[in-house]
Image 1 (tube, rainbow, N blue to C red):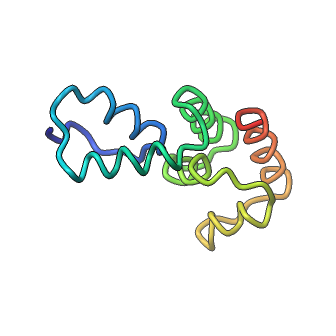
Image 2: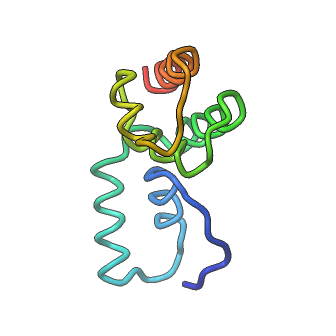
Length: 106
């Protein structure tokens, strides 16, 4: 397996890539697939849509949107923890992020 391009991906995206790899998986790939299977909180399609909406509608960076999709925070405080001090975000945007998460994660 070779690197074609680098970009942050969600756990469900990693799971799908590993499942579709087609090549014999080594021990590391098997461990990553096991992890992805255990800790995927969304299916592939929902994870992709969630990241796209967070980037497009709220204006988050893809890397931050991926972290939110992987963790699925349930409160504004949890979102602030993910954002850290890297970005100041309004209450309106925090509420919007939670609405988008609820729409995709149920």
